[in-house]
Structures are given as C-alpha cells and as structure tokens.
Image: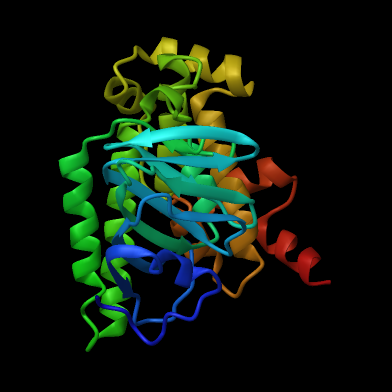
Length: 297
C-alpha cells in the first residue's frame, strides 16, 4: 500500500481502514484554486464495511469497479454496482456500505476548489442527484490511473499538481458524458438559445478583434437577419449594439487605469483613437478624457 505521510485530512483514514487491499496517493503540492486534487486511490473493502454517517471537508468521487454497495445522501439511498459513480459533497452527511456478500471495489479521488460545485452542477451532479449510472468503465479506469500516475511526480510537486488537475477535469468530463440527460447543457431550451449563447461568449472573448456580424451568423449556420432577430428577442439589442455595449463597458474599466486613450481604444477593438473617442462620447455623453477625470475626482 502506498500512503503518504502527508495524509492528515480529517476522515481520510476511513478510506484506507478495513480494506482487503488499497492504495492512496496524495498530491505532493499543497495548492489551492479552482480545482485541486487532494488524493486519489482505490480500495476493496471487507464485506459490510461502513463509513458514516459523517461529513467530509472536500469533494470525494467513488467509481465502482466491481461488486455492490449502498450510498445515502439527503436521506435518499442508492444501490450501486460496477460502472456506477457516487459523489460526496463537502459538509453533507453521507454514509456508504459495502455489500455483505459481494463487497464493492472502487476507485476514488478527493478534491477541493472554488469551482467544484459549479462544475459538478453543470454536469447534472448535485447533492440531489449525486449518482452517475453505468458510465464507460474502461475509460474511467484509464483516467483514474493517469491521475494517480500524475501524483507520483514527487520530485516536481507543482507539475504533479498541474497534471493531476488536468486529469481530474478529463475525468469529470467523462462523467458528464455519461450523465448527459441531466447536464446543464441538455437542459437548455433549444438550439437557437445555445447558438445565441455561443455568439455572446465569442463576443465576450473576441471583442478586441474585428468581428463581422455576417461571418458570425455564417459560422453559426444562420442568415444575418435570423441572428439579428434572435438577439433582439433575447437581449433587446442588435448583434452590433450588443458588441458595442461590451466594448464600451470594457473601455470604462480600462479608463480607470493609467492606459493612454490610444491603448484603451486598441484594447477594445478600435485602431483609430479618434473614432473610438467619437463612439465613447455617444455612449457616455462625454469624451473618454473627461470620463477619466470625473472618475479620479
């Protein structure tokens, strides 16, 4: 059994006790961020092995390789077998138990992160729906294995943390593929709304670049008139007006700094500072220099 001396998290000992075989690898880098792997491993509990009722301080995913067991969260019980995955959420009371006759063997990964709940919710995984049934088990096994290999880069902890975080995202993506009927993307109203969201996201990240509304419509498979109608219905603005709004709002933010007017103009998609100044005057009723002075006063 591989077990780092760093494994001091509350409750982690339960994951390695009362198993006929187990392996735990801990992230050698004590990082934090949007999504950070804490540890990963596998275990084969003894028949009837129980954990809980208890709470964890971190997210903990278990994927069943073989055998059977039961999981309970929010007073709802789930019977699980090979190919099923259950997710434990921080500060939620859970309990889970290996079957007496055919105890499960499972893979696990524990992680923290400011985006953990949002990412899982986007995949349709919440405390109310914490189980993903019958995923692609060979694919998941390979992803878990790669994640554990990442944690063995002990001579370069930061690289281990970076690689493990990437492998965790791939693992979550695969779980999302197996949970597509409950994912946030599937719950969106329809193709038109998804395409409109895509157009808006493109504007949000490409506002500093030349954007042709005709080309944007074509890339989404729409006629320009149809895209304009969608924008009007959902935002009250035409595509060009929406892009202009994004650019002007960003310009307001940049004008609070020490950038020159030419630098601000170029940063929001205007190569001509004079043209930018005219557009900004129409937007705020004053030129950018006066706007900056008023912010400073």
